[in-house]
Image (cartoon, rainbow over all chains, first blue to last red; front, side):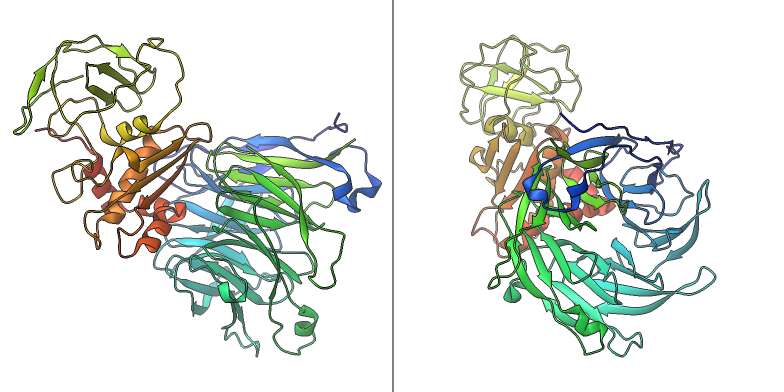
Length: 374
Length: 215
C-alpha cells in the first residue's frame, strides 16, 4: 500500500519539431504542480528504519537516442535533458551529441557541452531558448560544464585532457580565464565546489584533481590529486558530487565503487590555506558494471546510476565509529530502473519531495519519487 | 535476395539441396546439412523465402550441428548462445559467397577474422539470461595497430545484431598485445566508443571490415 499519490503532472511538454541533422538539446520539460500527500513528520530522521521505495512518477520519452544527462533547474520546476539524437528545441548550434547540460545558479541560463568541441550558453526567454554565446577552444569533445556558486565562472573539460575556466563578463561575454593541464587522459567531469571557488575534475586517468587559486587572482593550480596512492579509484572516475555543506564528496568509477571523501573546509573558509581531501570509505559490491553518475541530495541521500541498469541509494549509517569515521549503507537498489545503462542521476532541488531524475541509453528520462511505504 | 557462389581454390564444393528452416522472425535463417551448418544472418528484416533453393555451398571445416534443430516452431524464442554470437560475428548479409561468407574482415588483409584465427568459437562467452557477452580476440601480432579497429568492429557488429538489453565486453586475449590494458580500457569506455563512431574516418574503416564483399 502506497501513500496517496496525487501528482500535478506535466503542464506542458515541449517536444521539438524534427529538423534534419541537428544534434542538440532536446526535451525541455516544464513540470509544474505540487504534490499533495500526507507529510511524514519523521521523514528526515532515520530513513534506514523505514520501508522505502522508489516509485516511478513520470517517464519522458521524447528522445530517440541515448540520453547522457539530465539537469534540474535550481529555481523553477524545469528539467533539461540532453541526448545524441537529432532533435533540437533550439536553433542550430551543436553539430554533434550534446553530452551534458548545466543550469546557472540563477536558473536563467543553461550551458550545454557538445562532442563538437563547443559549449553553448542558452538564455531562457520564457517560450523558447536563445543561444547567446558559444565557447570554443577545446580540441575535441567537451564532456562536462559547471557553473560556480556565484555564477561568475564556468568550467568545461574535454577529451583533450584539459580543463578550461571561463569568466562570465557582462553583456553575454565569456572570456577564457585559464587553461588547466594536468590530467593525462580524457577529463570526464568538472564540478565547482558548492560554496568556494575550488574546482574539481575527474578523469579517465583514474584521478580526481583539485584546482584552486590561492591568491584569488584567477591563477588556478592543481593543489591536490586523489589517485590510487591516496585510496583513490583504480579505473576511470566518471562523476563527482558534493553534499549541501560542501564538506563531503562522493565519486563514482569504472572500478565499480563509490568513494566518499571529506575535508575540513572551515579551515579554508577562514583563510588558513588549503584543506586536503581524505578518503572516508568505499562502497563496493553494489553495482557490477561501471557507475556512471552519482548525486548527493540536500537531505543526505546519495544516488548512483550504473551500467547494470540500476539505481542505488545510500545513506550514512547512524553508528558513528570514532576510529574509522562515518560509513554508508545501502538504503535501496532499484534494479532494472531502465532497460539500458543509466548515464545520469540527479536529485531535484525541491525541498518538498524527494524526486530523482534518471537518464539512460534507452532514450528515456524517468522521474522517481522516494516514498516510505507503511 | 541474391545468392552467388564462387568456387574457392582449396576446398571441395558440395552441391546440396535442402529444405529451408526459418528459425527466428527477426534475424536469421539456416539450413542444416549432414555435418555442415550454414547460418545466414540478415540485418533486421524478415526473410520470407529463398530465390535459389539449391545453392552450392562451400564446405569449410567441421562445425557443430545444433542438436535441437528439430524445433521448427518459427516463433519460439531461443536463448542466444555462443554459437549464435559467433555466427553473428561471421555472417553479415545473406549472401553465400565462398570467400566472404564469414565476416568480419581483417582491416588489412582480405581474410576474415576467423581465417586468421583472431576469433574462434571459444572467443565468445555469453550468458543469455544475464544478457551478457564477452568477446576475446587475439590480434595476429603483438604490436598490432589495427587491434582498436578490430575491437571496435566487433563491438559495432554485436551492437547492431543483439537486443539492446545486452551488455558487451570486448577484450584482447591476455598476453597477446603489448598495450593490452590500455586497449581493453578504451574498447570498453562507451563514451570513447561513441566519440570514435562519430569520427567519419573510423566509421569508414569499421564499415569496410563489416561489409560483405561482392566478387
